[in-house]
Image 1 (cartoon, one colour):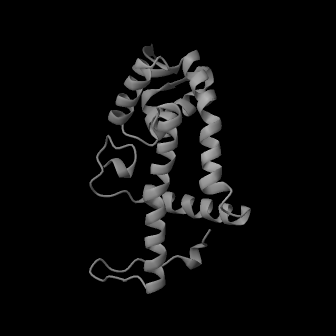
Image 2 (cartoon, helix red, strand yellow):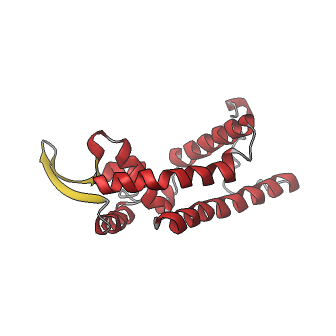
Length: 180
């Protein structure tokens, strides 16, 4: 992780601080990894379980929630997707019998919730070992413990920077900047 003293001061809007050759090489390497890694993990999930990564993370988030139940807005935020994307995923998971969608009335009014079914829990338990093996093969076992800790810390800092200053195009319904 970088300290505040290591952070670059933003350049005025009309001044461009171009990347050095080394920074450009590192940036390209990072972008290449960001292009290949999600696709590789999705491919394993699709091949082995008929799920995409987003659907897997929806099932995982529900499995960790009390009673296997989460409000749709909360679930969208936890799985880092828009409500629209979540709605499509929940519909697919419902059709498979892995999730149920319910309407609840409480002091806050009516709200939609997603509930993990027994079949959904079984699907997650069946799918998780293969997914963990692929995560180990592509990331965890490729890096030293120190490298993994460093890259995770860097990822947290980058995510915090994105969330602290989202793009201007973001609207009120935006769950995360990439959906804007």
